[in-house]
Length: 134
Image 1 (cartoon, one colour):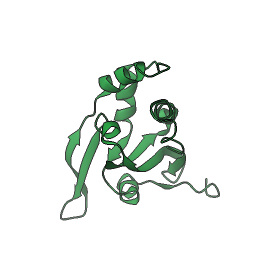
Image 2 (image 1 turned 45 degrees about the horizontal axis):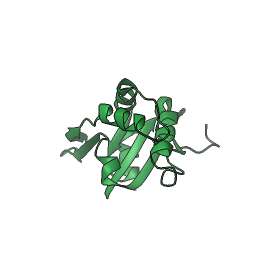
Image 3 (image 1 turned 180 degrees about the vertical axis):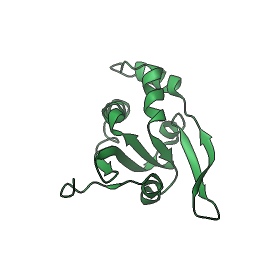
Image 4 (image 1 turned 135 degrees about the horizontal axis):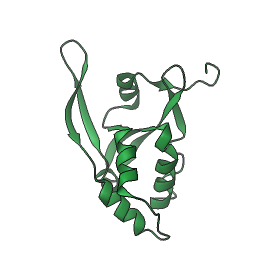
């Protein structure tokens, strides 16, 4: 089991929800339902917690550290395996048609790390959406 914080761009959140539900209907309930804002609009959705190693392995993961001035620097990056996710999706019952390019686009627009959620959100300049402020 592995801890992950998955911050998915709004443009790709429906794909993330649908794919998670296709892979693990019971375990994916409630994933990617919490909106994040940059202060002006909802830009991402977050899901965080323990995921199976099988689920975590094909996902990208970036590790971050702060330098002497407190700026975030990327320490390492695993790019993920879009082809493997698309192939796995096609083998589901029922099959979930998905192109590796769709997965790659979602990965490129999202942030997946081992950081605690509020740390990752702060690094990205995001906060939980308060419907009364936007």
